[in-house]
Image 1 (cartoon, one colour):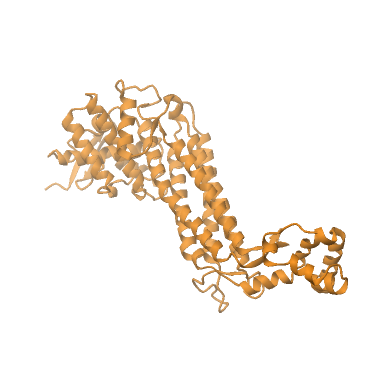
Image 2 (spheres, rainbow, N blue to C red):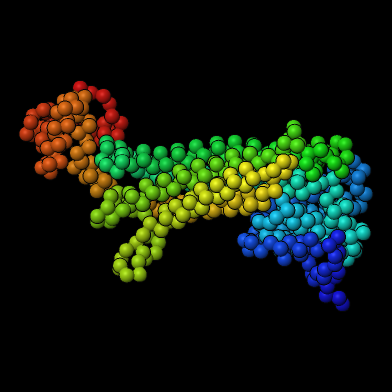
Length: 468
């Protein structure tokens, strides 16, 4: 039995192993684009989306009489198997390649054609019965098939990311409830400010992240718009009348997404603004997440010479030379993830700007940047929740002692004794090491012990009520 087959394109002939469902154009891509070492099979949602696009096109072409029913049905059946992940290992094209995604599109066309051929009772490579270009790619161009699949994959990938972000925000909210009765010092510019509840601090973390859910939803609505049927540049060349509308209808049914056909297919074929918007949202969330991790690192610093108001779960020894040292490794890794996403946003920005005339050929690097950013952010949120946030404990007594001994509580006295007198007390306390209480009540008699107790109740410290 033969162990290989010969395929040809207009550049010549090449030999492929019989086991390969991909064809000659995929083979050329493998030889030409050894860039990231990350094949598109590593993004199974993208492979799935490519199959959805090819199935939607086959069904529309069948309905419009462009494809024979037996070929269209075989393509659709093959797409179902590809979408189910059965042939993920055949999608080997590098995530970054030249050609505006043509290699990815042809990888899909070839795999689906060969799967369909076998289902029709033919051999791989017998393209006279089902051809990658003539049949699987019928009424399409890379320039509409690739971005449509990309947007479908992004939409589905954002679902999982959004869920992990919700879970992380909920974890912070649960800690907020747990820490609601713990008094601590608020800080501005790393200096003592005014008292607050530790619960309020953690609730703010939750609120901060929940704001990002709305931005994700906005971005998903933008990428719902597709240019399927635009073919090469938006003129619908080689596509039958009614095809763009019909294929969009089929894709809505196949994917369950609210996909919308762009009103101007010329503009939609070159525009990448939706990707810039989504990348900006990912960057914004990364910045927020990194800031929260900075706070967790500061609040847990010590244990003897830092703030030490909270304890992060001890996960591993922190030093090869310092015994007993435990580091905030999870916040640190989330910080680094955020740095990557922030950098990837610049990549998307530059790639979006680099498009010329009727097409942006840089979409592969945009897809790589967005896919990796969403994956890394999903992993970072999950890791932060599971390995850090749920296990945080509070050093209640220490946090409250810091408040009681702080000079910052003098701010509570402003409405009672005035700013000037309060400033004098703060100055003396800082110079002498005496407490604000002893100076204000015992030494200067500026207010009674009863008034002091009224001002400095727990509830008034965390929910101040104006009093004179």
